Image (cartoon, rainbow, N blue to C red; front, top):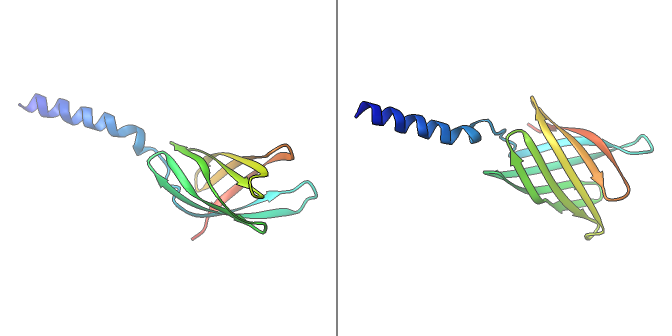
Length: 121
């Protein structure tokens, strides 16, 4: 009987390991995306994470957009927003690094850049 409990306990522990290392990204984050002119655009994120599914909003001076195709796997995060009424597809791919998220952002055919988002307390 002890052996069965040990095996069952070990099995359950192994089943939970993939989710144990996932970063808790739910909440508000803020970062600055440098522009080609040297000025930075402040971007605010409001993330909601359910398992590997990421939803929420991205807000900047141009307005607020819904996150689509959002995924969180371990410390990796990716999502898309359709800005300007769907005219611009902006792809965010990032990795949690300590208390920061380091993003690579692709703004349709307009360009790309890197930014760091920090949790807002």
